[in-house]
Image 1 (cartoon, rainbow, N blue to C red):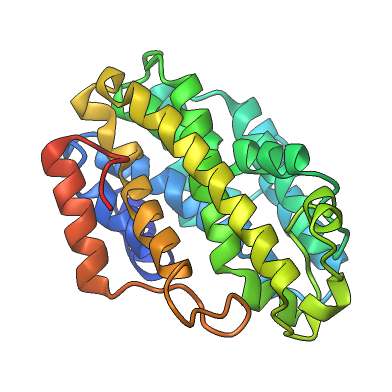
Image 2: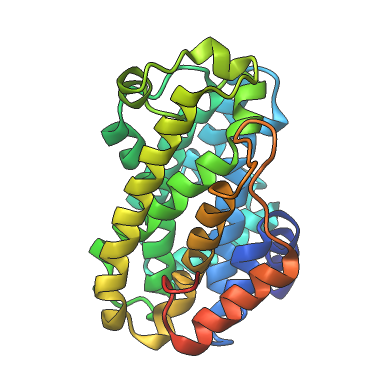
Amino acid sequence: MSSNFDHVRDLVYAQDRDRYLAALFAAETTRPGLLALYAFNAEISRVRDLVRDPLPGEVRLQWWRDFLQGTEHGVANANPVAAALADTVDRYQLPKAALVSMIDARVFDLYDDPMPSLNDLEGYCGETVSALIQLGAIVLNEGADPGTAEVAGHAGVAYGLCGLMRALPWHAARGQMFLPADLLVRHNVETQSVFKGETTPELVAALKELRSHVRHHLGRVRASVSDIPAKMAPAFLPLALVEPFLKKMEGLGHDPLKTPAELSQLRRQWALWRAARKSGVALAG
């Protein structure tokens, strides 16, 4: 089984470096379970990038759904991520329904349907990112209820919205729109202009509003950060990167469709280390 956890560690290092670095601050005994969750998340979140059409993507997601729900897979446990996840679920009694909901939410990724509203977008972030944070907190609390559901909800929405704004150039290039329709209508943003890579004042205004929603949720996390026990803080640590990313988006000359908001690896590591040292997961800026 150790080889399975070695595999998920290497996968997360390659696919999700920020969460990998955050996991290094977890206790050695719970770190493998945390990384197993992150590897599972990496697998389901990149399905769109691995398939040309939605149907094969649906099949891949159904495989994970069936695995979690106990459908016979034959050699399914030969998949090291699945094996490590199964061990983690059993050891910490993780709610499988939350993991299945993560998969269900990822079906949206496979299609080019518009995101109907900000409420729907926040729900999507809640079922994907917030759920991952909460499940991570359960692992770090060794299977007991961590009492962090509400703060994890706000943390996941803040991190998820920030990530989707950062990914806007890639999504727009393939004709996919995560920016909610009601936000676009409110600011008179034309979807086709976004797909053409045209940064308009209307789009800039819409993204400014969306950043205000991110900061609202960050504020809710900051108000509760003292209630997060230190041993569960690693699940929330990636949130320390949100404010620096927002400031990058607001920098002079930043084009949201042509210049992805990036931070150097050293800057990311420093932000995570400083937040871990202070146990102020949302306070780094």
